[in-house]
Image (cartoon, rainbow, N blue to C red):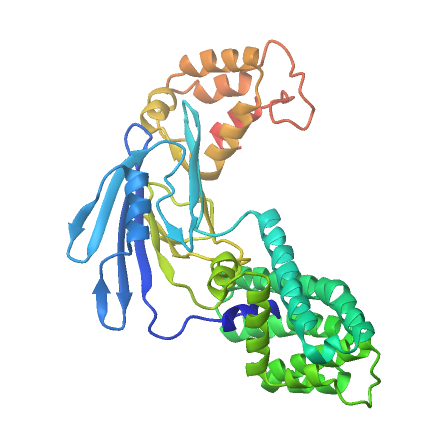
Length: 443
């Protein structure tokens, strides 16, 4: 309940020290037939060492691999081969991963693109709908509490003014501040991927997001300008005083008047919690039900209970990636985490080119297309029309190594000009051959 109360005013919370961490390691490599061999190992770690994976983690892996996995002490391992779509084999707070490996092929080689979203929420509509539902429930709770308060019942006109404030202004402000807080969390979780200095991330958050939220609340009358400096040390009490002050003003009380008795009691945070639980009872919703419905929306920045390592064993150095490349091991790796609520899911990506060495040696004498030039060649070839593709394929199939290879490449012309826009790489060249020929020759 206390966590949900903090959530309602968008104060993110972190895991307590010593919480169990669900850990995983994923290793992948391409097989000779172009499939992806994926191996997953899962376990749990805590202060006392390693323990068996949670049942939810095991069940997710079992469904993805169609097997119970191999036991290795406290660890459980799974392995299988997959095509373009990778398995949803990781889970965090009920949210799974999604990944794919796209391959664009041609006789000269292929370009491989790997993208995988770690467990996290990418349904922003559901996130906004959840925020709106929570704002509505919080409003109903306080309206229910207010209507049964004896001291407020004795002043029905002021009670109705309070209800109008709760259902209108306060509800909308709560919804807005949640969205602003979630936007901040999304930015922070994105910054954490690229920044090595935690202090730099926190300072950026303070300047760009925290102060923006504070400015909104000052503008709406919940904080006074002179209270801003108190927020870092006593933010909860300042916010509580601001809400009570706004509620009293809506009821018709002046700035210098004492709070009405019902609101005065709420200056005590424990009384606020008791009143909130009383309101939940009145709308027939238990604290446990409320937490079950909305805890999955809570951000958990700066810490996570699901984390691990993802490794790709590659034959070629990636052309683009947000992972770390180890030239000696010929592997690409990421430190991966699961995220929840409004935190931006972590995205892993890489793209690399794999030449078909046998084909190129047969027709060109050596590997002439690789890395970025092979990628450009594959893209150029994909832009050819069916007629051009047939002509180019027949021409390439007839090439053989020798002194005339370069001249033959430079002399090739399509029988018909391309009908595609002039910006397409398939446009015939005036001299020196087609763009494809120039790429092969390295010109």
